[in-house]
Length: 242
Image (tube, rainbow, N blue to C red):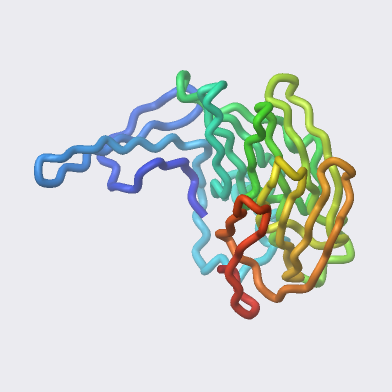
């Protein structure tokens, strides 16, 4: 997990303080071509995790104050041209999952997701879609283990209106399971997604707020495509995240 948002990945050679975060800047030069890479930091981790993250679980991360607040990763990004900003979906164990980054001010603003979250909603993973009306559709993911599934409600699909700052929660497609990725077909008002810990595929009707189809797939593709006929295309590999 990283603690910054980076638009290009190069070594950073100087640091400046900014309101709302840190600015790291590096200049990459190659055969007469130069590129300035800038990173804007939302939070700073004081006590890095000294073991592979896969060896730890949800309970470990929320019991450590520094990890709970500062061990974050940017797992969804959506540019909003009208607002000249980037909406950010995070992995964050304190449930502070939604931010807007102003490209003019170079600052982050929390979008108050903790006020609406349940404790297992700690990630927005490949699940931010910008609608034609300027609103965003998102979905919540998890990182807890199977032994806590019955404690959890399940991942939710939500609509966020940047103008009013309001969230509208549309439904839970698969009880006790969370949503790893979504694809939205605005023309047909359909949302396609995959769930975790059970690797299932679902189709959700946005207009009527109900699940139209739910099937066990045994795979979670991360890159999918919709064609003009409304057909959904994805890869498959047994019990893997593709």
